[in-house]
Every structure is written in structure tokens, then in C-alpha cells.
Image (cartoon, rainbow, N blue to C red; front, side, top):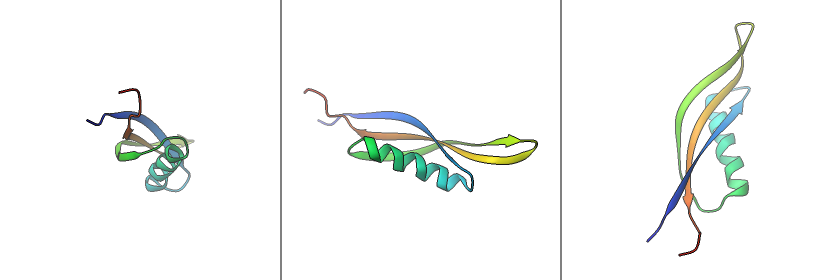
Length: 69
């Protein structure tokens, strides 16, 4: 039997939502093992003076839980 844990991350980028999502997954991959699925759940932008300064992607990432069985 497998168990998976799901965490929520927010990736950011100055250029695109796609890059923001990729940044979230890349960062998760540096500290977690056995990543399985990433789902973009929300996209938004940070604005300053009416201009886009940052794209943000909220991403749910699942990975195989390796606790005691």
C-alpha cells in the first residue's frame, strides 16, 4: 500500500506563470523525494503602480510518504 502526502507551494517569476510553476516544482525537487504529481491550483500576479511585477503560481505537489509502516 502506498501513501502520498500533498503540500502546497507558491512559485514566483518576473516573466511568466509557466516559469513560476516550474520554479515551485524545481525547488520542491531539491528537498523532497519521489515527487509524483504537480497541479497548478491558482494563478495570480503581484502589481505595483498598476504594473505586473511578479507572476505567482500556487501548486499542489504530491510525493510518496516514506514514514514507518
